[in-house]
Every structure is written in structure tokens, then in C-alpha cells.
Length: 455
Image (cartoon, rainbow, N blue to C red):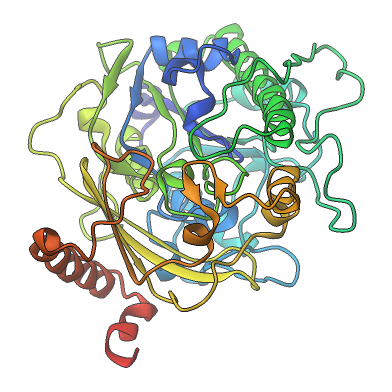
């Protein structure tokens, strides 16, 4: 049993998960237009990872990985949990909050849940999903009583920003695509952006629809940032900040075509900011390869509960938090996406190094399957209306119809448009990556492993 003295020496942990926040829209990751002073401040007081990736670019499936340390094809949450989609983790999965409760932590959650079943993800404290809507400042303030309580604690704080608002397929070119309020929330001030001021990233086309949606997207991100600022202030007001580890990530990339639901870089290469009172260096960038399968073992490691060998598909990165280029760290990471909604079947398995990305499109003979909100977005519908052959750096044809294998040199081709998989000079590399992917699938008990034999 953990003694009170041992508990008092342990850090508190706050895991902040944004909803569809791509790395290209953060000041500390190089965007000079968007205003994210609180996240930038966390990065200045900690470390930002530059090779940090989700393992599946869909909300519920990604959150299942974050909260279990297991690939989603192994934990059972192959896609969305809500409504008729009905995916859920297996009943015998032991989640992060349960492990922390057993280890003497008081656990709380607020904001977006998007996990199932409820009993697998048992928290001591929480509020109904959606209670605060998009009002992240109020959601942060509502955590004050929980933060004020006994230590150590773990808080899972999940914003609904900057996810797209509900899509009406009969009228996709609607305003307010990202749920920005008509009037500012009480005690908060909205940050609007001019459409001609936003930066259009390479994976999007510079069209009026894209700029309009980016301006709304920026506004939603700034609201998220203000909520995080209030959460940090609550921790400071209650005297807990200096004993608290804060981890900021997003479940997947931006809710735009060529990002969310894809395992191209805009969909999977995401922000990860860690502010730790246990590490001395501040304001640095770490280039170590990490994934969201590492989050659960890392949190447990910070909690002093160990990094159980073999229990997870990830490993703790606590030891490299303040190292810019950690030696003797992993050379590759893996990702696995199968579903978004039940109707969006497009399984992919990915091996990524710092230089190369190899994608195995298991159902490559199918057209790429669009999520309903991405298909109905003004950005995509505008491109279809105008008959664009190109969307961002990639052709529409290449986006919708993909080969079985894709290989990209991320250093020479960061936009992933030149597929090297069929080139003779890369034959040995492709064969090596295929062998490693098969081993990964076998080790993680991937049901899609049999596709190598039967298709």
C-alpha cells in the first residue's frame, strides 16, 4: 500500500487532448499568425516533440490508444464508439485511469469522452460529456474543486475544439463550420481571424472556401488555447502547478481533406508538448520518435507506477523529455487505421522513420472512403464544384485512388507526393519495411495480418 508520505512526493498529471488540432496551427510549431500564447508558454516552460504521431487518425479510435497504450486493432475500438458505429474496447482491457486509481491516484475527467464501454474507463470524478460545449474557459474553471483536492491526481481534460460542427449534408456550404459561438461566452472574448490573413498549408488549396474555413478553425483553436490558459491559472491559484506534469496532444490532424482520417503527415504528425517539474531543460525541441501508444506508459512512469514490459504497444518517453536528440532511442514507429465511422472502411498500416514513411493500403482497390464531415466541407465541395484536378499538393485522383504500397522520403518530399515504392533503387527498402510491418502486425495480434496471405 502506498503511504501518505509516498503519495505527497508524487507528481500530479494533467493530460490535455484537443479534438482535431493539426500541428501547422500552433505558434510554437512555427505559425506566425495564429494566437496560441498559452500553448506557446507551455512549450517555453517545457519541451515540444517534433516527431510525435497518433497511431490512427480518427477521434474515438485514437483516444482508445491514448488511454490504453494498445493499438486500436488490439483493444477493440476499431472506429467511432457513438451511435450506430458502436465500436468499443474489449471488456478485459485495463485502461490508464483504472491503473492510476489502483496506484493511489485520484482521477478525474472533463470534456469529450468518446470512449466505450464506460466501465473500462472508470474515473473518480467527472461531468457529463458536452456539458460545457465549446466553452473551454468555463470547463477549465469547473476543474478547480477537483484540483483543490488531495494529491496526487490525474486529470483528463478534453476539449471539443477545434472539431468541426455537425454537418448538414443538404447544405454543406454553411457558415460556422467549427462551432464558433454567435456571441462570446460569458467571461471570455472571441478571437476572430481575417480570411486573407490565415496561412494555407501545402495539403490544402488556396481557395475562398478553404480560407473561410481556416479562419473559423483558427478562431476555435484560440478558444481552446484560452481554456488551457485558465486551466494553468487554476493549477497556479491552487498551488499545484509546480508539482504537476502537463501533457498536450491532439487526437488526430485537422478536420480537412488530406489530413484527418489519413495517415499522411497532416493527419498523424501532431503537436506534443510536455511541461514537467522533474526535468530541468526548458524551451527545447525533442526529435525522438513517439506515438500515442506511448502516452499510457509515459503517464504511468511519471506516476511512479512503472513501465510494465510487454503490457503496452508503446513505451515510456519520460526519459527523453529534455533531450533534443536522444541517443539509443527507437528508429521507427508504427500506425494502424481501419475505420472512421462504420461506413468508412479503409485499413492502412504504416511504418515511419525520421526520413521515410511506408504505407500499406490493405483495401487499395477501393476508393478512399471519406468521413461525412470532410466530404461535406465547404473546402472539398468547393473543389468539386470548380472541377479542381489538384487539391493542395496532391492530385484528386491520387487522393481517392491509392496504390497498395506508398513510400515517401519525408526529407526530400515533405508533402508526400512522389511515391517511391515501385522504383528499383528502393526495392530492398520496401521489402525490409514489409517484413517489419508483418512483424508489427503479428506482435500486436492484428486481425488484418491474414490479408497478406488471402489477398
